[in-house]
Image 1 (cartoon, rainbow, N blue to C red):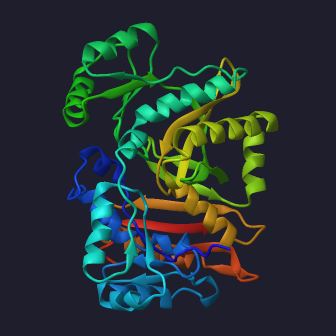
Image 2: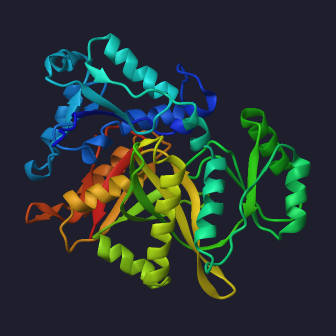
Image 3: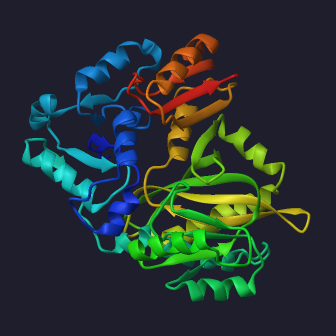
Length: 405
């Protein structure tokens, strides 16, 4: 039996912009850097036993873990440059695993290897650039629809390089519309159009998007009922396996807000209130087949497919493939939280929130600890508030579990 290497995880959200730039020395925007700083320990909760997560300050990470109830302490270890020497004596090198594979994340791991960390770093393939683009998601949508002829047809996003092309699309379909940058994720890089005219704010947004990425996509906006996703893992040798379901919520502008926590059966039951079991299983099989065909022999790692239940002519329908996220996802984190740390009878939410004002996140953290005391049963979370990352007066991004509230 093959024994897998332990992994060294690195949390690098927003990697799509690094892929778009193609630069190994890409510097993320300030909000993304702050998210990386505040939520850098998130891989503690989805890594496997014996894995590591790279941190700037291992002592601070260990301080945070010292306050975690022992039964909830993850078997994943923080690792910083100060402790990197111990990895040089490992019988097997660590496998470098970023949140999202990009030229920047590969360069980061290569720099660690140059400083003495024994690592197996994956190579960058040019195919990954196209696979990360929304263009690939649109092509996969077409293939999935071809495998599901009985489902309501979805208009495939149209990719445009000029405002005139966007206006041409708008002359064919009624409003509202959703514009997207080809390289963006988690609700970023989106712009809503509510009328059938290109007004000044939209033209300004398009000018910036076209300058940065050369294209935008446009599609009709739908009457959303529920966001959900199916999570997968590809072995890079032609096999793509379904790993679980996630149901999530977004903020009004589309950015991720929270995921439901609970058993796989309870999540499926929530969707069955709108969509039949057969339709959901047919969808799962179709998407698995298309992913296998598209990237199964190229990409190795986790990925998620965002979907949607919406209203169409008074009935419920499914959008089978809104986004293809070639990375770990918040939905995958939620799966691991539900399976490893939640009591089987408990339900709750995995929440990511950003507070713009200094000290606001810390004050909210302290208040929630008092308002929602953590209750464990059978060594699992039954109810209450549980922070997944350190929270200090300097924190802006929080990631936490809230159950039974």
